[in-house]
Length: 439
Image: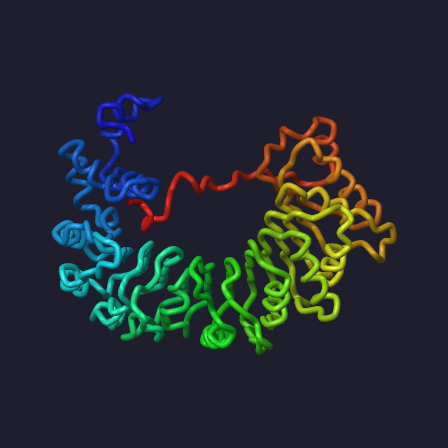
């Protein structure tokens, strides 16, 4: 961030930061906080640069809405943030890790500070990397009614309970009528049960501990989400699949599955168990030949996704002779957008360009293709575009985050004559960490 003096001289025009009206200066401060990688540092820094900056920062409520509760955090600092935030929605992060391993976290210094503002909590994150006692959930804070809570994230991908109580714990049992987005990772998914009645977006993350979901718990959990429209299963979260009962989710339109380190049994059971007749978008990550074989064995006998329009393969790794991939695509005739992302995406493109009969062309409705990486092997894309043009099934748009300039000029010119080339940057996830991990 620029210092006050640097900010006055860094502009390329006669307009300096000191000439900005207070409202615009406040907006600059809030935007800067969104890109800060230090806990509480940004708002404190801008409020100690100059008298005017301090006056603007202190009276910009949106600058003070991130509340962090840790064993090292000062209750007085939290009180200051709550006061300065005014009536703005709050984004609360609780990290209940004690100073020492197995030490219980004491909520009492923070409880009476937070509860008077509980009606303003918009997002709540509970993050732990250690073992802690589940009695934390008996605290009055977790029995409260949160009328404005919309997002809940519980991340115990590395942490767990150190007590022997295996009973599920409710969270915010007083009610969360607006809760629509839930992400549960690690023991958070197994041991904590939020209200799911209004949830539309759900992420269930992998479990690094030996404890995993069982099929009954998984079934009951998803059955409690009648409005679910987007589901992400990140890793092999279920320990075993003894005759899984089908789970009907007619409201689901988007499904995202990460198959990292998964076996074919897990793949088959997930696809077979989830009954999603209205699915419109399917994303499959870390896709290798084992995953493709398992998918083909299910989809070949049961066309499960009659309305699927968007199909995304991330980290695709298949051999060019993998006929199973063609089998999968043949069961999805209405797909209009396809993403092939990974080191062997060219093999997938070659498979798409094989069929010689117009009646056998895979994905006949395909109009948009995203392809990564776009490099010297672009001939595979050239062959695919030519193949579809020959059969009267042109692709109208080609997307890539790779620089279009890496494509040879003659190929680039040929492509531009026949479709729209769209280049867009991938988000730089390394620049800004989730707020609860900035310690």
